[in-house]
Length: 214
Image (cartoon, rainbow, N blue to C red):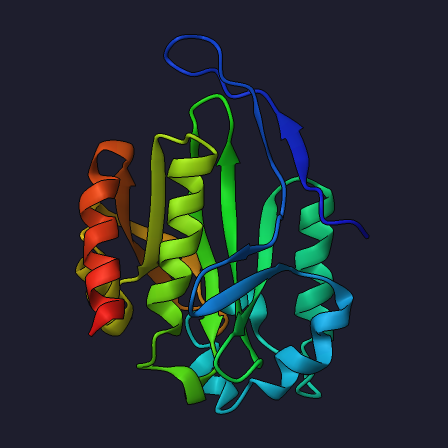
């Protein structure tokens, strides 16, 4: 399966912008984002510990009953083929390890927007540079390369750690969708939505770069 997701025409304010979203390799000083492929399965599996806690909030990557990520990886790549998801594997440059995954979701060409989501990082790399560097890459790519107008992020209202991390980016909290979706245990999840607009990106970028410089 190739890395191309789908081609679309995004019309800018002057009516001249034509672009495409594909899962292209991205890199900065801290991480490399590689187009997700079946070949990442073993490395992704090796990054997982404490799966119940890790995937409590990222149900799309919840392991199969045998603990394998083969099922979620296959489903993610199937969504790529349908044009619904633009996924990457996250590789940390300091040790060369694949440490998780992130994606664009809800791609809307006509309205020049995406959501950054289905992000998980192995617990061994929590509170490191990985999440910040990942957000710098994927959000920067959306605004600076693809010319998008809006990037959304969302999280479970019970996931306070995720909410605080999104707020530290400088994203604007827009509100809560009540009983938005069911959790894997069948309970109703209220979803907190955030967004960053293109005019806000320079300030957000400064926050991310400052955090990485510490």
